[in-house]
Amino acid sequence: MSTAILIGQPAPGSTLEGDLRSLGFDVRIATDAADAGSLLAVIPGDDRVAIVDARFVGHVHALRLGLTDPRFDASAVSGAVSARPPARPALALAVRRAAESTARGAVAVGSVADTVAAVLEDTDVAVHRPELGSLVAAVPADPQAGNEARQAVAAVDEEAIRLRSAVKSRDGFFTTFCISPYSRYIARWCARRGLTPNQVTTASLFTALIAAGCAATGTRGGFVAAGALLLFSFVLDCTDGQLARYSLQYSTLGAWLDATFDRAKEYAYYAGLALGAARGGDDVWALALGAMVLQTCRHVVDFSFNEANHDATANTSPTAALSDKLDSVGWTVWVRRMIVLPIGERWAMIAVLTAVTTPRITFYVLLIGCAIAATYTTAGRVLRSLTRKAHRTDRAAQALADLTDSGPLAQVFARALKSAARLLPPPVYAFVGGVVVVTVSALTDFGGPWPVVAALVYCVTSGIAVSRPLKGALDWLVPPFFRAAEYGTFLVLAANSGVNGALPAAFGLVAAVAYHHYDTVYRIRGNTGAPPHWLVRAIGGHEGRVLVVTVVAALLNNTDFTVALTALAVAVALVVLVESIRFWVSSGAPAVHDEGEPA
Image 1 (cartoon, one colour):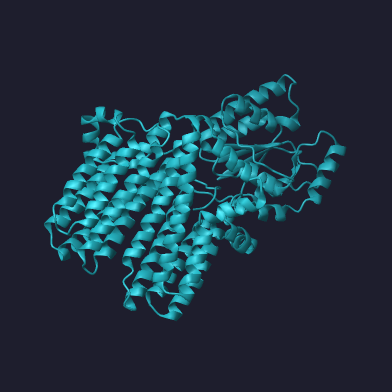
Image 2 (cartoon, rainbow, N blue to C red):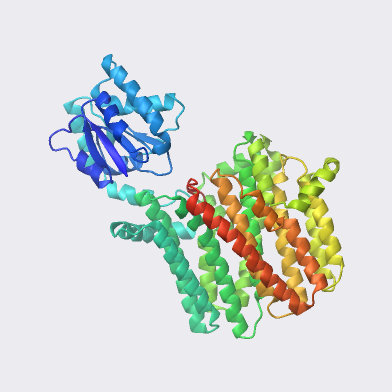
């Protein structure tokens, strides 16, 4: 529930009370700040409460931005302030202080809301003040100022601004010029019919799954339909975020759905392409798994780099300065956004190639494009890190430690071999251990003991890599090296087994583990901490899973190895999904709202 306390009587002809009701507020009238405090005391504590001056003149969307955004505990525009339940005690205190100031004659009735907002900020409550642009929000001091404010309101097309602001501030070329010009109107259509972003997100998922099913038919008609449906799924994927921004319907569940469904859609589509190719006699499961591994590792590079530098002090770099300078030149902005192959460009490419070529060609082009993008982004981040003078915080080091997903074995070796960490930087240990286990697994006969030995070496180097806080310039490379090593080992062992079904089983295992890693990222982004330690221990940590899979490959025959991979994939998926769903649905974690460039 939401309640708005309107201080004073609105002027004749004012639509303020109706505007507040249209935004979902139950409106109550107070004569002054003291009366507002009395009303506030009887409003249930789990209600959002807004304090609004009766002389407010402005756009409805300005009120929506200032009073209804669920991402912020307190927010305000001129003449209005709002507080969610966590900020209610501070709001009550601020109203009492405003009443005391009014009693002393220090505050006019028309400025009570602004005084309350100022008191909140003085008591260290973070008050969000949205960028209004040309939207109007004012408390006129006299009739002439009121007329001028109303004329300013009439001169601005509020709906055009609302539609424009529904689009992400940073997006890829394809999304900006080929999707957003019309998807914003689909978002408005959905809002006017009471649809929620979560419903649109779910519709996007089902559309992508149907596309994957069409691709799995292996027919030309199925491939054409799959490409068209994948593009439509992406339109809906843009629409859900635009609907959330258009109507300010942000939620914890919505953030989780949006974060996980994109990956589920893309990887399910890869599986559909592989199944369709198999129907035509072409086995491309290794390519499908390789595409998933490469794309996931790309994301981990982005996540790790951003977390390492999220709150770093003295965070300066000549490379970053050059990048910022290039962002001021129009054509370089779009070239740089396209070369990283963000989700819009990537899905458009996959859709077109699916319709007009074969799954094998689609995966070849996808792998080449993602490899170029990964090289470009990783090289840029390495250059920034080497030229950056930054002091990384304990929070950043903890985030990187959580992203490593280190299990019990790595922790044991970390304690036992801590002194060895002084010899080489952590990324060197992570890289060398990963190269050893993947190379040995790829170049030796399936079923031999050497991959197990290499996995033990990997466990040791993994422990040394995380034995000290990850605060070095390139320590953010440790998590992506671990991901590449783990996923790569699963891929090459399954490929070497030579049994039908081994690569699909490895695909399922990597998908389950990757979900766990994405879940970790979005928990950290939401400032809720990493998944519980028991979960990491239960699924072994990255080094434990690598050791288990290599041991299984050494002890079992090829067919039984496939069965074991499948069982492990199901077990990991069940554990991480159940705990993840429990957390995001019931924990009350804050929504993660991404306005950055999509990946």
